[in-house]
Image (cartoon, rainbow, N blue to C red; front, side, top):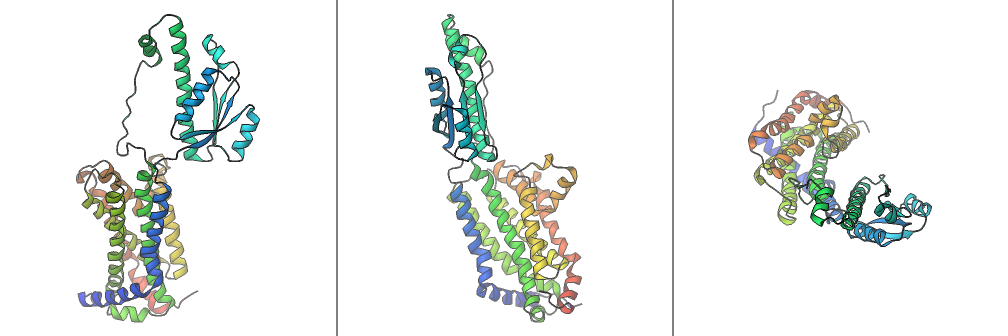
Length: 391
């Protein structure tokens, strides 16, 4: 078996660097595609939360109380009353056509029944086909309904001679002091972009790793590549991946500059530890890429494997749906995705600023992916030398 030498690795690395610099597809995947995704996602979520979501108002009461409720609802930053209807059917048609995301319904005689001590009902409807819009509008409408109840109790109590302090103690005996940790602004850009953008970078790393090996098979330059590494598959793989690692890591650091220095996203821990987590994510993704092309040593199947696995990582990493709420087999499967460990490191190091003692296992887990190529290297070398290219 050929021995690995520093000279053979450097020779293979020089060859790969030349291919990277002269290959348009590498430029696109390593630099252009990440920058495009940064511009797209960061500009799309630049406001942090959606604002002025359209709502239809159906006010059958048309009293001073109902108009005050409408003004309070419209005053919320996320809600904007764009239309007033005298019939619920018209408002429902608007929501079904997607012109409004919610309906706030005030029934007839609402203020008269409420002040007379009769039970009355405020109704609101949200279109939860748009999950974020529906959830935000539901919160604003529920708050308005709660304020309406308090407003009626206040007016009724004052009419019976009670003081405002006595009435407020009955309306809200326990005052809630809410303090969101890590992301107190409830900014969706902070929550999502810190994970979506590194996740896209990891997906590109896997695809480029698979492509850079698979294209050698397709273009029948395998022997030239292996000769540069003195026919050591380990040295040839290292020589091929080291330049890619450097380029991708530099792009990842540029992303950190944009997120943490340019846009001032919160970092309550160490940026060095986050940089280490990013580096581990990149090399873990490369190791997965080598494993994938080793299992399916054709360009088409290897890229399909990489794309499927990379896209699944966004669903199973835990930032869109908690892993603890998934089925136990899926919870165990989530550990096979590097993005899952990066997500936990981001929560510990960037958001919570925890000590390294609580996070070191996830660094080790990412480095553990480096063992995967060892399972397929011998099979990969045999396939490179003996299996013809299959389009």
